[in-house]
Length: 277
Picture 1 (cartoon, one colour):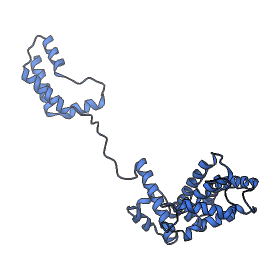
Picture 2 (picture 1 turned 180 degrees about the horizontal axis):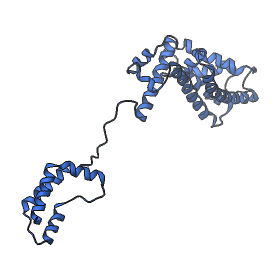
Picture 3 (picture 1 turned 180 degrees about the vertical axis):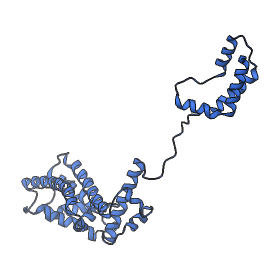
Picture 4 (picture 1 turned 135 degrees about the vertical axis):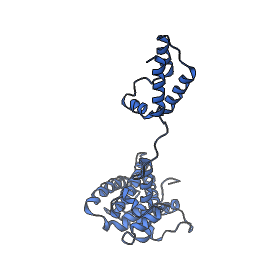
């Protein structure tokens, strides 16, 4: 068969069965694509003539049969959220749950209440937490971790004892009373709902928190700025500060900073040694 007839048959095969070309490209991606110029050179080497129209038709057929590589990422699959989205939704679940636990109580808050507050279907939050109890523990752990970070930032400055104490009082009150700070209040009033195994993790954070207070209180005792120190000073201080969550009203004439100053004066029962303390 003349070379020109071989070429006509090849072109007809390509036009009628592009799947053959696709299959070949799947089997060996590295193999160079058949192109018109190679075929033309082959025919020319055999001293035959190739009509231009046949060559252009074959090239067009090859181009349409060659699979394109689409750089666009595949559409996101339904199911478990991606990492950033999951972290954001998990945090929102914790925040909304903390508010509900504080205002309604843990026992009176249902998983449907939480899902509705976040704006998701009732079963969707199972991607992030297995039970309502896990959310409660997350609320308490996050609250203690944030509170610990706040007072650790104060402790590293090695301030004079009275100033350090007032800063601790301010941080503690802010944790209890500032907007969107529902975590520690939940810890105070829902501690009985936490199982024994989960309590251990929270207690570890609480011990570190209390150790910073103990160090500052000991420095105040040594300086003589605490008029009548006792061995229960930290517990009594926490009792007084924590109770503010029951009666303090934002926008009712006193802010948290002023309340911290008054609380420091009340607890220490001594005037500041220097202005501004």
